Amino acid sequence: MSEILIFDTSVLVDDLRAGRHQQKIQSITGLLRTSSVVLAELWRGATNPAEQRFLHRLERNHPVLTPTMKNWLESGQILAKIRANTGFTPEKLRDLHFDVLIALTARSHGARIVTSNRTDFTLIQRYRKFELEIW
Image (cartoon, rainbow, N blue to C red):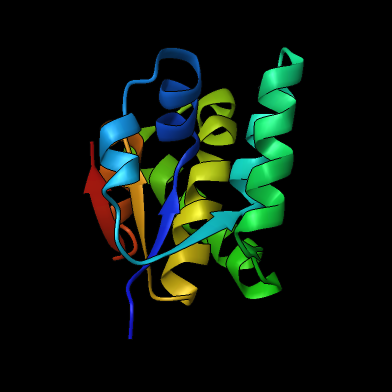
């Protein structure tokens, strides 16, 4: 069985805007899946027609994985623990929420997240284990 990979928003934005990960992305083996949360983040920031075309292709060419009700409820529980342990502000917790959802969705599908957002994803990993690769 092939490994399932999900690119986090940070990797796709770095590549789209600066071509930063082009060689690594082209050398990936495994089944690429897209997170609906990542797509929502990307659509929110898409600033030109080329980025919008890229997002349409991403949606068409790679199956989209979406958080379940269980993922949503668990994400709130994890964020409550993070708040209790770190004292993060509501704004910081809101920023983390999508990353927690991406992590839980990947975990549910046995997928590995590929990200350049080391800080947030390694923090989340302390509360729920999931496969992670940092670029």
